[in-house]
Length: 312
Length: 293
Image 1 (cartoon, each protein chain N blue to C red):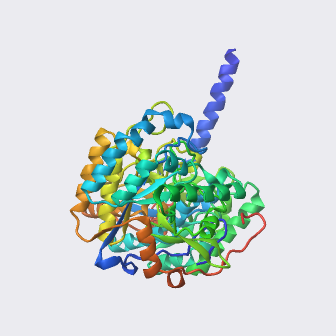
Image 2: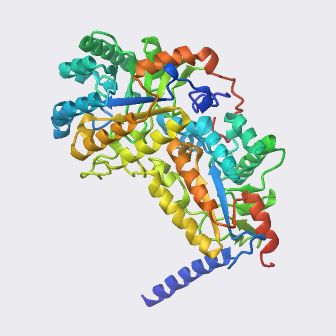
Image 3: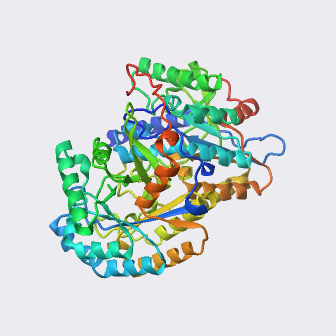
């Protein structure tokens, strides 16, 4: 594609439905992401955040209920955990890993890294990798920059350096990109084809935007919407043989009606044969083998011309 | 003072008169034989251009990039599967970002129309003309012909000088109508649409700088119900509906599936015509030309 610095991150056209294949003849991939972040805003987790009832619930009963429902429906999830919580809730992180879920890094304290200078971002990245590795015994291979309810936009955050730093630090994937609804390559340098596999994220499948959101006042409760969106998206993706993803937070999804809706939805999901329910690490490994950059990242030089009076 | 009130009344009366003079409505449109109602299915193929214009961060750009990588292909496939001829309002810069998709849009018989150069209209007259000509030239490089339609706030006089036969924006009436330029006295056909029938209103969080908390997170069934009601209201009158979608929004799998159901439902009624905007514009210009002078 005519890749364009400052506009695009990947190649011109995504893979068509008929170009995809999943392991062992599976017809549709499913990725469930659990975000343990309790940060309310871009600065990351604060003392006030940790003291909130939502955070306490999400760390205790909410998490226990979520673990049980994932287990009941045989779902192996990808857990995005900020380093701070990997340290403070190390027992929970180890329990999740023992359940069979993948532990991925969700920033140092679940902050917006785009506000950091490169050196600071790199220092936090290195520290985060170490702390998460310490909690689980193996280094994380996935990194998430998921959004917070107090963010100005809903897609999550990266800086101009994030992808480059993640490649340098040996990460296998970045967890939340919007440019496709399947895994795709995020190019950090066109000339060298330096790129990192990115897993898809779309905020309509993330419970935080529907549970007492926005946060000013007490927000609106639209917690019947996620399950409606999940069902509609899953039906469409299953028909296409493509990829379905969803993001839940124990502090939100753990409560009463929301937990019931999740339980019902996962039961509905499991009635469909031919699913490959996979973690980020598994998806990344499959993609590297079946759709590697050499054959599936089709970059072409830019044909963009700059003009006076036009944006470059 | 009472005389201030009189001045107030006069000022407002003059404003209303100007607004009335600007719009020339057609009370009832005679559609071609066998047609009861016309629907223009349109796309605003912005991809990430408007996000870039508003200096939004990478996550927002990525959201727009989905429109070029995935969304546009799905929308054209959807239109083709229903025999619908669509109009793709395309900013000129998209030709340098997604040329393959635009060649496909054209090859499949859909119209590519103007949507500015980089999704804004410069205030400087010379620069505005430069942008309009660049955009028209970019589209011509794909289709072999200059576009005849626009969806923009380009100056009407300039559009008419450059050979455009219709614009498509605003909602002062349900039916296609004319905008009379007070300066030149000339009339330009307008194909109206209302934001109620625009997918970005329902699904694009932080649309047009509205802030994350201005929630736009509807589920598709709710939108389907509203859009069906809009269609049905116009069908009963033998009227017109303009549907506005953005590939980065409606190209998401759950929404393509919903639009598939909605189009099937619309086509279950007799006499529904789905032409390109240019084809519809030519029909209206021929059968209901603007008044003289």
